[in-house]
Figure (cartoon, rainbow, N blue to C red):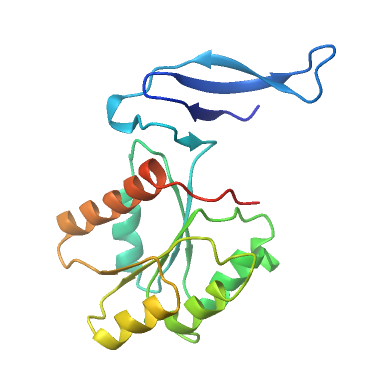
Length: 191
């Protein structure tokens, strides 16, 4: 039985634990149990149904590991999926081959320097696709080149972040990204 969370104004939290049909009512109604949330993850009018899915498109195993560690134990419970290059990322996003059962990501973290199809080209492919363009894409890269910053924003990246070099700052940045996009931002519903 799927479990989801609908959070209404602060203090009124409902965990949906199932559904039921009532005579004379079209569709299914949720059976609910009120569950208080820790104050740090209570936000007004936030809708969370299951864990958020983040697609990290990164070929550096060290950066993948650091991102996994940063999200480990997060109170928001985001799930991290990794694609090592642009070709695998597109297969994941289009649910092809090994990724047939892949969830639609709620957020993409994209490195620019990837083998094969680089992140700049991949960004253009994703933002040029009607079915994918609304997924927020955060550029998370080592490049400080002003031309990369301009190009990424011209291709409709939602944010450009230069990777911090020390773990504590990197962890803080990843957690702040997660918190902003899944706790404060309003995202369009996926499929």
